[in-house]
Structures are given as structure tokens and as C-alpha cells.
Length: 83
Image 1 (cartoon, rainbow, N blue to C red):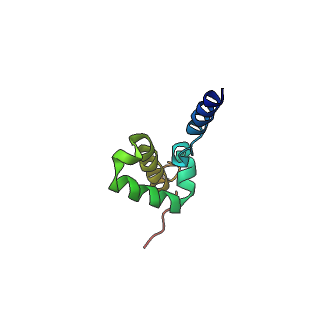
Image 2: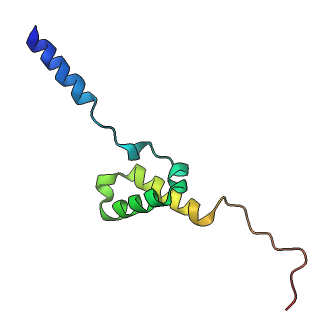
């Protein structure tokens, strides 16, 4: 009986390993945290296979979002200044 409980305990602990926090990060959360975004961009650049395509794609999308903003097109003023 003790062996079964021991094996069950080990199996439960193995399933409760630390989860990867980067897997839960969204594009919005990455775009709002430039330090974390820069760190993940560097890691994806060095070892994309280890980081995973899904995370690196979110990092790329967050970088694009920070660069382009919210996507509102530029509208020039009705009366441009004269030089």
C-alpha cells in the first residue's frame, strides 16, 4: 500500500511542475512590457526552436503592435501650414 501511495505522490508531483510563464503571455501584455518583450525577442533570435513558434510569433506581433501603434491611419490637417 505504501508503494502505491508513494508512486501516486510522485506522479502528482511530476504533474505539478512549474508552468512556463511565457506560454500564458498575450500579445497585449507583451506590448505593454517593453523590457520583457526585448528579453523574449533576444531569446527567440538565439534559439527559436527552444522558445517555440507560438511564443515567438506572439513576440513578433507585439513588436509590430508597438511599432505601428493601434493602426489608426494618419489623417493630414485640413489646412496644412505654409512654408
